[in-house]
Image (cartoon, rainbow, N blue to C red; front, side, top):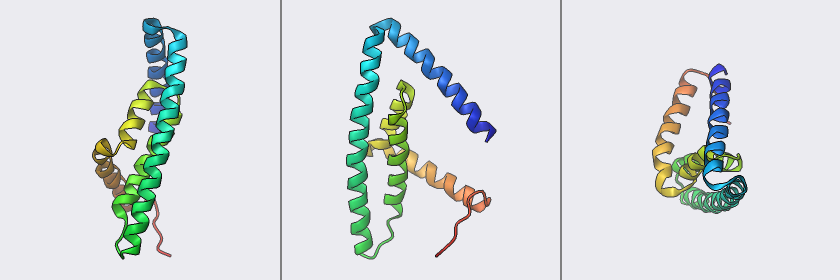
Length: 129
């Protein structure tokens, strides 16, 4: 929990610094416009990718296969959408990397390993129904 609070504090400070820096280069109103524009584009892209992933997962299930990769893609897309909805250029960059299918793979494996480690350490409890 401490690391999460520290990360949020540092990320917020970095975002403010980037806002000020880019605002000095292009002007504050352009920064506001860019934040709104990247949010709209990002959320639209996340919605499209989420629907596509959901449809692929349903097809996988109907073929009798486990949709493990699609579940991990869904986690990446959801996390990316949260980052894209959060105002900031750093969070937008990470959000786009998580949402775009070409760059999502490098995060998917890391997230899967992290979740596996959390389950093994009993930080997350997994119950079968």
